[in-house]
Amino acid sequence: MEIIDPQQALDVSLWRQSKRKELLASRAALSVSERQALGRIVATYVITTIKNKYINIEGKIL
View 1: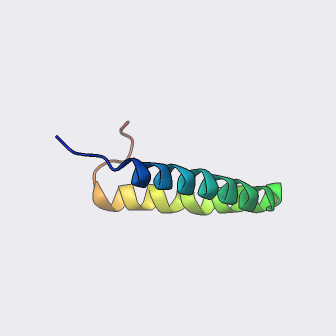
View 2 (view 1 turned 135 degrees about the vertical axis):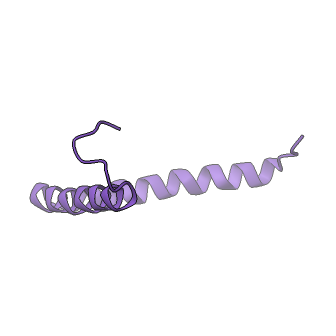
């Protein structure tokens, strides 16, 4: 059984809340077109990575 340090759990929780706010603010600072462009870049990367890992995936559903 793993023992959880309550202070560490609190610290992690506070860090995650802070980071979430930071990321949401960063995203809000982008225009719609910038977010769309970044989304296309990420989607292309993910699709390319999957195709490279699973060579015969074309036309199949994951």
